[in-house]
Length: 318
Image (cartoon, rainbow, N blue to C red; front, side, top):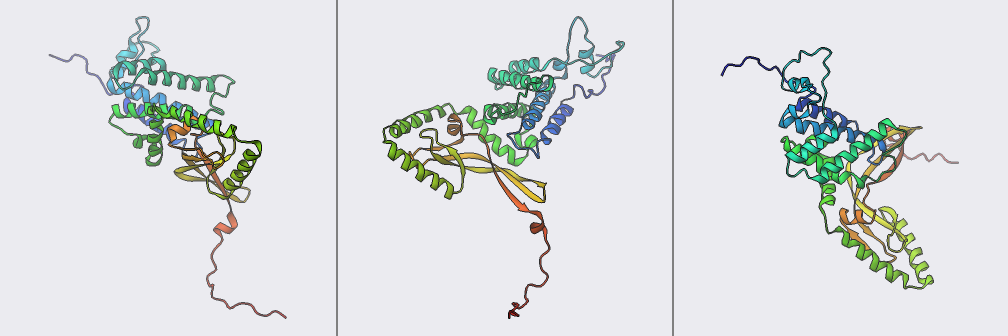
């Protein structure tokens, strides 16, 4: 059959690769940010929108086009044609409709992922268009597991991986966070916490004070992130694994180096509670990434080494 009107290339408004590259650009803005900062959550909420649009456009750019009140110019444009409408402006569907369509198209993009996407981008809109700091003080574990799980599904639909978008180190952390979203048995840890709490409350005040004091000394002398035990309230420790490379900044003649860790194990020597696994730690609100900060004097760190260290000792004392 003869082709009467030949389409051109897909415009950037609708092109899946261009939309994906924009998501990648936004992810790259988080490279020097710590994961508990509101800016980190904001940039990734922007990245999620364009990743979702890229995945939908990868099925067909026409799925992104708004068709409203018999105005089908955007649909026509999304297929590679040039609309003849006067004052034509490309119009896409809203992000909530994007997530709804992804839910209808991809079996593994469930209602939970749709709900999360609408909520997370809704918080982004609140952040950008109101006086409310929507991401300030929000626990990373309240959104990151479902965020990375959604991204993994969308990336897979385009033949891409978490590593392609987030890099090798963050992708490793993402896989562990995704496991948190999928672990249905993690709630059992609440029983362990309750049991240790009952045993602790049965002890005398004198015994509790002695054990808590000993735990405080122990926690001070051991490496780890000091936290409060969810069972007895004593000083206890979190141990974790580093995420990515340490971040450095220069301030007042010092180099401040910050390394993020993803929690893996908890221990309290006062009541004996031990918890292993990020999903179980998350259930008792100990799953957020934590930071280790070290300071270095820039002058000492970058001072040139002595070219000759073989001088004899100065023994000219009188």
